[in-house]
Image (cartoon, rainbow, N blue to C red; front, top):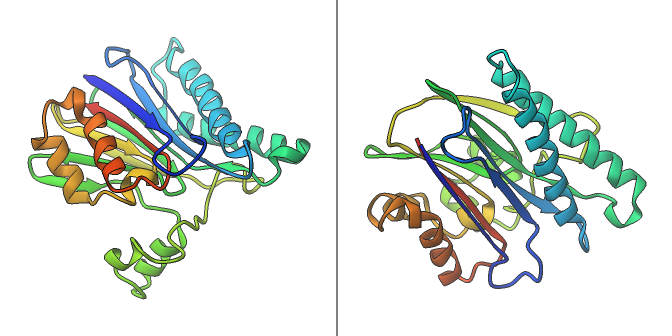
Length: 242
Protein backbone atom coordinates (compact mmCIF):
# COMPACT_ATOMS: atom_id res chain seq x y z
CA UNK A 1 0.00 0.00 0.00
CA UNK A 2 1.18 3.53 -0.80
CA UNK A 3 -0.08 6.94 0.27
CA UNK A 4 0.62 10.54 -0.76
CA UNK A 5 -0.70 13.94 0.33
CA UNK A 6 -0.61 17.59 -0.71
CA UNK A 7 -2.07 20.89 0.52
CA UNK A 8 -1.99 24.33 -1.05
CA UNK A 9 -3.37 27.76 -0.21
CA UNK A 10 -4.90 28.03 -3.69
CA UNK A 11 -4.96 31.10 -5.91
CA UNK A 12 -7.16 33.46 -3.87
CA UNK A 13 -6.97 32.86 -0.11
CA UNK A 14 -4.29 34.49 2.02
CA UNK A 15 -3.97 31.53 4.40
CA UNK A 16 -4.28 27.78 4.15
CA UNK A 17 -6.90 26.66 6.69
CA UNK A 18 -6.80 23.03 5.55
CA UNK A 19 -4.76 20.41 7.39
CA UNK A 20 -4.02 16.75 6.70
CA UNK A 21 -2.07 13.77 7.93
CA UNK A 22 -1.23 10.27 6.76
CA UNK A 23 0.87 7.43 8.10
CA UNK A 24 3.34 5.50 5.99
CA UNK A 25 1.75 2.94 3.72
CA UNK A 26 3.53 0.07 5.48
CA UNK A 27 2.11 0.91 8.90
CA UNK A 28 0.23 -2.00 10.56
CA UNK A 29 -3.00 -0.01 10.25
CA UNK A 30 -2.40 2.89 7.86
CA UNK A 31 -4.70 5.87 8.28
CA UNK A 32 -5.18 9.35 6.85
CA UNK A 33 -7.42 12.37 7.27
CA UNK A 34 -8.22 15.75 5.74
CA UNK A 35 -9.73 18.71 7.63
CA UNK A 36 -11.01 22.00 6.23
CA UNK A 37 -11.19 24.73 8.86
CA UNK A 38 -13.55 27.69 9.03
CA UNK A 39 -13.67 30.81 11.14
CA UNK A 40 -12.38 34.37 11.17
CA UNK A 41 -8.72 35.42 11.24
CA UNK A 42 -6.57 32.41 12.21
CA UNK A 43 -9.41 30.44 13.76
CA UNK A 44 -10.02 28.10 10.84
CA UNK A 45 -6.38 27.10 10.81
CA UNK A 46 -6.51 26.54 14.57
CA UNK A 47 -9.59 24.31 14.28
CA UNK A 48 -8.25 22.12 11.47
CA UNK A 49 -4.85 21.75 13.11
CA UNK A 50 -6.40 20.87 16.47
CA UNK A 51 -8.66 18.31 14.80
CA UNK A 52 -5.77 16.61 13.02
CA UNK A 53 -3.54 16.53 16.10
CA UNK A 54 -6.29 15.24 18.38
CA UNK A 55 -7.49 12.65 15.85
CA UNK A 56 -3.97 11.37 15.20
CA UNK A 57 -3.31 11.07 18.93
CA UNK A 58 -6.54 9.16 19.64
CA UNK A 59 -6.49 6.89 16.61
CA UNK A 60 -2.73 6.34 16.68
CA UNK A 61 -2.84 5.30 20.34
CA UNK A 62 -5.80 3.00 19.73
CA UNK A 63 -4.22 1.31 16.73
CA UNK A 64 -1.01 0.64 18.67
CA UNK A 65 -2.89 -1.17 21.45
CA UNK A 66 -1.85 -4.80 22.05
CA UNK A 67 -5.27 -6.19 21.12
CA UNK A 68 -6.72 -5.89 17.60
CA UNK A 69 -8.64 -2.61 17.66
CA UNK A 70 -12.33 -2.12 17.03
CA UNK A 71 -11.89 0.61 14.47
CA UNK A 72 -15.40 2.06 14.18
CA UNK A 73 -15.76 2.90 17.90
CA UNK A 74 -12.22 4.28 17.80
CA UNK A 75 -13.09 6.60 14.91
CA UNK A 76 -16.18 7.90 16.70
CA UNK A 77 -14.19 8.41 19.88
CA UNK A 78 -11.55 10.37 17.94
CA UNK A 79 -14.20 12.61 16.34
CA UNK A 80 -15.92 13.25 19.67
CA UNK A 81 -12.65 14.08 21.40
CA UNK A 82 -11.61 16.52 18.67
CA UNK A 83 -15.03 18.15 18.80
CA UNK A 84 -14.75 18.65 22.57
CA UNK A 85 -11.32 20.25 22.31
CA UNK A 86 -12.27 22.59 19.48
CA UNK A 87 -15.53 23.55 21.17
CA UNK A 88 -13.71 24.32 24.44
CA UNK A 89 -11.06 26.44 22.69
CA UNK A 90 -13.78 28.28 20.79
CA UNK A 91 -15.59 29.14 24.03
CA UNK A 92 -12.46 30.12 25.98
CA UNK A 93 -10.56 32.08 23.32
CA UNK A 94 -12.35 35.15 21.87
CA UNK A 95 -10.12 35.00 18.76
CA UNK A 96 -11.42 31.49 18.04
CA UNK A 97 -15.09 32.13 18.71
CA UNK A 98 -17.27 30.20 16.27
CA UNK A 99 -14.47 28.24 14.63
CA UNK A 100 -15.00 24.74 13.27
CA UNK A 101 -13.69 22.24 10.79
CA UNK A 102 -14.78 19.41 8.53
CA UNK A 103 -13.14 16.00 8.75
CA UNK A 104 -12.87 12.97 6.52
CA UNK A 105 -10.65 10.04 7.54
CA UNK A 106 -9.86 6.47 6.57
CA UNK A 107 -8.26 3.55 8.39
CA UNK A 108 -7.06 0.63 6.27
CA UNK A 109 -7.50 -2.80 7.83
CA UNK A 110 -6.35 -6.09 6.26
CA UNK A 111 -9.69 -6.78 4.55
CA UNK A 112 -11.72 -3.55 4.79
CA UNK A 113 -11.36 0.22 4.85
CA UNK A 114 -13.24 2.18 7.54
CA UNK A 115 -14.16 5.80 6.91
CA UNK A 116 -15.69 8.60 8.94
CA UNK A 117 -16.79 12.08 7.87
CA UNK A 118 -18.25 15.30 9.22
CA UNK A 119 -18.99 18.17 6.83
CA UNK A 120 -18.28 18.36 3.11
CA UNK A 121 -14.73 17.06 2.77
CA UNK A 122 -15.04 13.90 0.72
CA UNK A 123 -13.79 10.38 0.10
CA UNK A 124 -13.84 8.93 -3.41
CA UNK A 125 -13.15 5.36 -4.52
CA UNK A 126 -11.48 5.08 -7.93
CA UNK A 127 -10.98 1.87 -9.92
CA UNK A 128 -11.28 0.53 -13.47
CA UNK A 129 -15.08 0.59 -13.18
CA UNK A 130 -15.14 4.35 -12.50
CA UNK A 131 -15.32 6.77 -9.58
CA UNK A 132 -17.73 6.75 -6.66
CA UNK A 133 -18.21 9.34 -3.94
CA UNK A 134 -18.23 7.23 -0.78
CA UNK A 135 -19.11 9.88 1.78
CA UNK A 136 -22.21 12.05 1.85
CA UNK A 137 -21.77 15.81 2.21
CA UNK A 138 -23.35 17.36 5.29
CA UNK A 139 -24.39 20.52 3.48
CA UNK A 140 -27.42 22.62 2.63
CA UNK A 141 -27.18 21.86 -1.10
CA UNK A 142 -26.80 18.10 -0.54
CA UNK A 143 -30.03 18.16 1.47
CA UNK A 144 -31.66 20.08 -1.39
CA UNK A 145 -30.46 17.48 -3.89
CA UNK A 146 -31.88 14.65 -1.77
CA UNK A 147 -35.25 16.43 -1.62
CA UNK A 148 -35.22 16.75 -5.40
CA UNK A 149 -35.14 20.56 -5.33
CA UNK A 150 -31.92 20.87 -7.37
CA UNK A 151 -29.64 18.56 -9.34
CA UNK A 152 -26.07 17.64 -8.47
CA UNK A 153 -24.90 19.85 -11.33
CA UNK A 154 -26.92 22.80 -10.03
CA UNK A 155 -25.49 22.23 -6.56
CA UNK A 156 -21.96 22.93 -7.85
CA UNK A 157 -22.82 26.59 -8.55
CA UNK A 158 -25.62 27.17 -6.04
CA UNK A 159 -25.16 30.29 -3.85
CA UNK A 160 -25.53 28.14 -0.70
CA UNK A 161 -22.99 25.53 -1.80
CA UNK A 162 -20.53 26.51 0.95
CA UNK A 163 -23.01 26.17 3.82
CA UNK A 164 -22.41 22.98 5.79
CA UNK A 165 -24.80 21.47 8.31
CA UNK A 166 -22.23 19.64 10.48
CA UNK A 167 -18.77 20.65 11.66
CA UNK A 168 -16.42 19.80 14.50
CA UNK A 169 -16.70 22.54 17.12
CA UNK A 170 -20.13 23.77 16.06
CA UNK A 171 -22.17 21.93 18.71
CA UNK A 172 -21.56 20.24 22.05
CA UNK A 173 -22.33 16.85 20.52
CA UNK A 174 -21.26 15.72 17.08
CA UNK A 175 -22.83 13.25 14.68
CA UNK A 176 -20.42 11.54 12.31
CA UNK A 177 -21.15 9.08 9.50
CA UNK A 178 -19.29 5.77 9.19
CA UNK A 179 -18.64 3.77 6.02
CA UNK A 180 -17.01 0.42 5.28
CA UNK A 181 -15.42 -0.57 1.98
CA UNK A 182 -13.95 -3.87 0.89
CA UNK A 183 -10.20 -3.51 0.54
CA UNK A 184 -9.26 -4.33 -3.05
CA UNK A 185 -5.58 -4.26 -3.96
CA UNK A 186 -4.70 -1.54 -6.44
CA UNK A 187 -7.83 0.56 -6.02
CA UNK A 188 -7.42 4.24 -5.18
CA UNK A 189 -9.02 6.09 -2.29
CA UNK A 190 -9.01 9.88 -2.49
CA UNK A 191 -9.66 12.11 0.53
CA UNK A 192 -10.04 15.81 -0.31
CA UNK A 193 -11.32 19.17 0.83
CA UNK A 194 -14.03 20.97 -1.13
CA UNK A 195 -11.37 23.26 -2.57
CA UNK A 196 -10.69 20.39 -4.96
CA UNK A 197 -14.13 18.81 -5.42
CA UNK A 198 -15.85 22.16 -6.03
CA UNK A 199 -13.74 23.01 -9.08
CA UNK A 200 -12.83 19.58 -10.50
CA UNK A 201 -15.58 17.21 -11.60
CA UNK A 202 -15.75 13.55 -10.66
CA UNK A 203 -14.94 12.49 -14.22
CA UNK A 204 -11.90 14.76 -14.26
CA UNK A 205 -10.72 13.25 -10.97
CA UNK A 206 -11.17 9.80 -12.49
CA UNK A 207 -9.24 10.65 -15.66
CA UNK A 208 -6.32 12.28 -13.85
CA UNK A 209 -5.95 9.45 -11.34
CA UNK A 210 -6.30 6.56 -13.79
CA UNK A 211 -4.87 7.98 -17.01
CA UNK A 212 -3.03 11.20 -16.18
CA UNK A 213 0.22 9.60 -15.07
CA UNK A 214 1.76 7.59 -12.22
CA UNK A 215 -0.20 7.52 -8.94
CA UNK A 216 2.67 9.04 -6.97
CA UNK A 217 2.14 12.24 -8.99
CA UNK A 218 -1.66 12.10 -8.70
CA UNK A 219 -2.06 14.64 -5.90
CA UNK A 220 0.13 17.17 -7.73
CA UNK A 221 -1.84 16.68 -10.95
CA UNK A 222 -5.12 17.30 -9.12
CA UNK A 223 -3.70 20.41 -7.46
CA UNK A 224 -2.44 21.71 -10.80
CA UNK A 225 -5.89 21.21 -12.30
CA UNK A 226 -7.57 23.06 -9.43
CA UNK A 227 -5.09 25.92 -9.77
CA UNK A 228 -5.78 26.12 -13.49
CA UNK A 229 -9.45 26.65 -12.61
CA UNK A 230 -8.64 29.58 -10.33
CA UNK A 231 -8.55 27.59 -7.03
CA UNK A 232 -10.74 30.03 -5.05
CA UNK A 233 -10.28 27.94 -1.88
CA UNK A 234 -7.51 25.96 -0.21
CA UNK A 235 -6.86 22.62 -1.91
CA UNK A 236 -5.92 19.44 -0.03
CA UNK A 237 -5.79 15.83 -1.22
CA UNK A 238 -4.58 12.53 0.18
CA UNK A 239 -4.35 9.60 -2.23
CA UNK A 240 -4.17 6.00 -0.99
CA UNK A 241 -3.31 3.14 -3.31
CA UNK A 242 -4.71 0.09 -1.55
